[in-house]
Amino acid sequence: MPEIATFVAELREAFGDATINEAVARGKAGEPTFFARENGRTVGTKSADAFNRWPADGSVRDRHYCAGCDGSCVGTGRRYSERR
Image 1: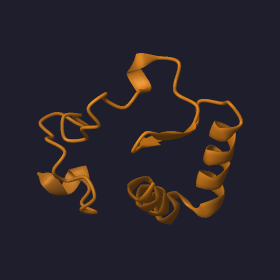
Image 2: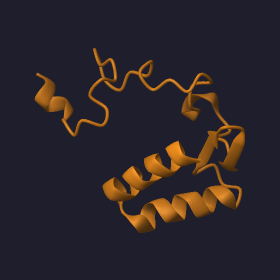
Image 3: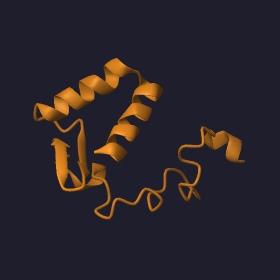
Image 4: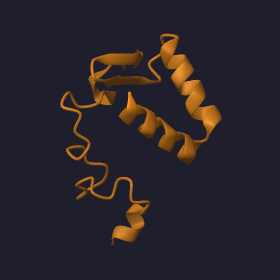
């Protein structure tokens, strides 16, 4: 799961090892705190509601994080306030 591993590493950088390790461990234990799927492999527990689920096609750009956002700022380190 190389893409998921890269994503989780970026989450660890942003939120700290302890926070992400706890979320992953709780997801593996059956809580809906972490779920990943890549190349037919899954880890963790899916969210029970559709609101918090990742889009079925895996698209990030189709999600709008704030009014007028197309997702192109994701991963750039720019804050929303810097877009104006």
